[in-house]
Amino acid sequence: MEFIVILLSALVIGFPHLLLSIQVDDWFETWQEVITELPAPQLARLLVMLVVPVLLVLWLLYALDGVLFGLLHFALVLAVVAYSLGRSGYEDTLNKFSNALNRNDSVLAMQSLRSDGLAEEDDDLVSLQFECEYELSYHEFERWFAVIFWFVVAGAAGAFAYRILVLAAERHQACVHWLGLVEWIPARLTGLSVGLVGDFDATLAQWEETLDHGVDTRACLYSFVGKAIPPDLQPGEAAQRVETLRGLFRRALILWVVFAALVVLIF
Image 1 (cartoon, rainbow, N blue to C red):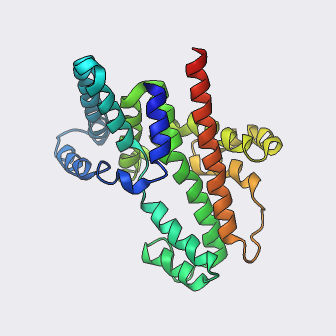
Image 2: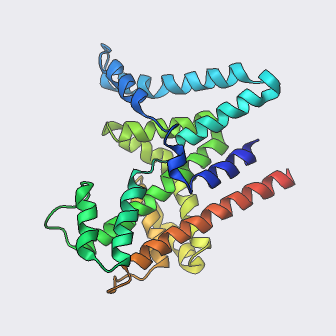
């Protein structure tokens, strides 16, 4: 069952708009408001906010185990993992940015970022290009690789717990460090995977350096993928660099799926 879920998630992640109906986070906003009313220290409130939804998912998985020959349990696992996959907001912005660059329209490229609040009036295109690559590396990681890592380690509840922590980190600074700790291992595994389908020799040399990044997931990931693209931005190659990064993560995703298939066949 695990391999089927991994395979389906790898297929559906290429069509993020198909997930819009299930990736609704309004409940989390309401839940957060309820938690803020609790007469308890902030740390205790944050822990309750994170733990209770995960426990509820665990209970549902346990309650549906074996019902209708396990079909309901499988459907719930698939739904939870689908919900836990990354959101498509950054993908939409990046598509507009890349399309403008493909037409050599730097003005429209800048406007596409400003309209989504990702650029200021005094930002230049070169610095924004590197910022987009930096954020793209993390976006590709957290929307699938981190989710699947925790699904393999702790099941659907583990994938769900990761997504809840991402949502909490977007709203509470105290959760950012926790998220970095949770992402430490999967980020380095993803970086190695990207390196294996990119510049293998440079990736092996990069491994020890990632230990200096601590829990900064973005810096860790970009230190890997940055080896596969030119260090300097040349005129006219901005859009190609974005597609190169996307291609690296697509090949790394296929590598993970193939590895999962081999594990199933062997064990």
